[in-house]
Length: 136
Image (cartoon, rainbow, N blue to C red; front, side, top):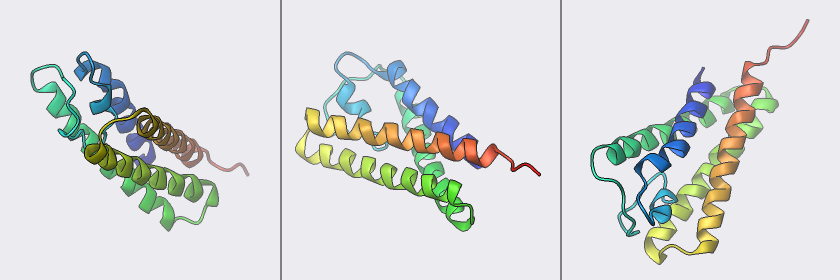
């Protein structure tokens, strides 16, 4: 259930970017999970961007919790992709922080998106494998 909830939370974060984005806001969306203000990118007015930031923080905590809980298990089919998900999430966070200091550029943006996609893909694997029961 934890893996499924984590996958859902990350999915909502990824999809909700189009709901809060205004023209030219790609760089801010790439700043997840921090959505830093150092990158000057417009968002729609209102509370929806704040709700998305809070949801993004929750998703980050769930990713790390899922990774740590999977490490307690002994099934390498789950622990390995969970470890990769946690690692890729940390890489994604580091790139987001780096973009706050050096600004957005296509190379960092591409690496950030690749880490996000990799994190999501690993979480899909964890969720599927955690939900599959062994036969007799």
